[in-house]
Image 1 (cartoon, rainbow, N blue to C red):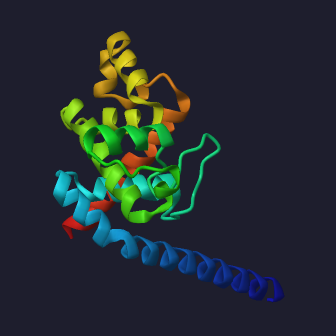
Image 2: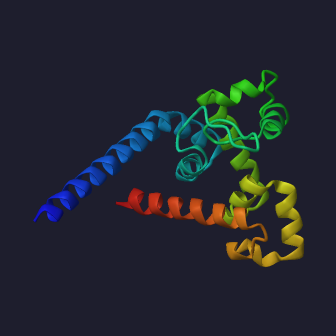
Image 3: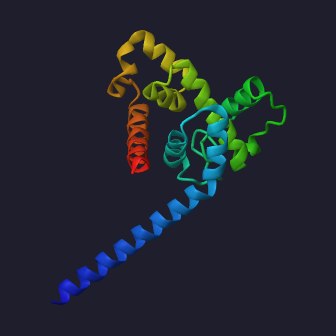
Length: 180
């Protein structure tokens, strides 16, 4: 009987922790959703895809920084952020620190998804692979193995394969939830 009580308490604590974490994630996502929606509407990008990228990349933490140097909510590499800002958005105000500004980061990241989407004719596997591994790598992979357009298991980098699968799962879940 004592073991049952202990296990019950552990289960209740576990459920409480999971519930609190879910609430925090939902609260963070809702905080940034108006900005996500604004730029997705402007650049014709599916907001659920942008939310999926943010969830996987930073878990809605605007000050996140990866070991490789990607920054902010959408984990944008400084050079990518600079290129998108200057070449496509005609912005002359780019600084690395701006990638920690949620509005600037989302604007830049969503536009980058738009560039990749246009380039890869909205093929989500290639968009996500490029977002993770870099455009040059994916263009090279497509020449060597065109099947990756349809089968993300054919992606040669293990990390990118996991990344595409992770975001695809989040995206599919959001789309299913969105239809209800």
